[in-house]
Length: 93
Image (cartoon, rainbow, N blue to C red; front, side, top):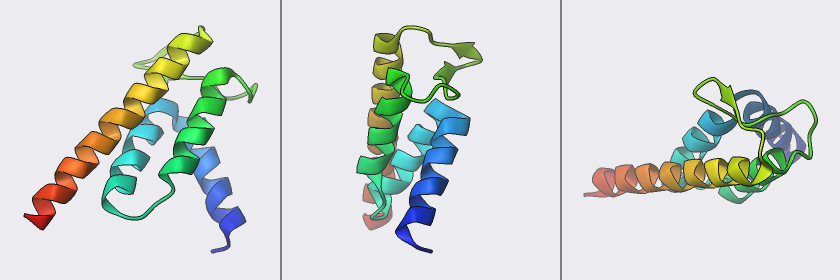
């Protein structure tokens, strides 16, 4: 799969599933060499409102404030990376 295909798949996944996709992709990125930088870059763009059809939704509620959306996406990435790193450590142990 070419790089453009991976990028397209990643951006559509985050655009469609938002916070949950960032969390899951960061778990995978902590265990396997994946595109964590690209995930968080696109998450920041979604939080900033750069894409008119993509919104940050958490537990069924759309977050209107760009700052709050950025904080939610950042925490989702942080927690995903933490869970993935703990899982990777457990696998290695």
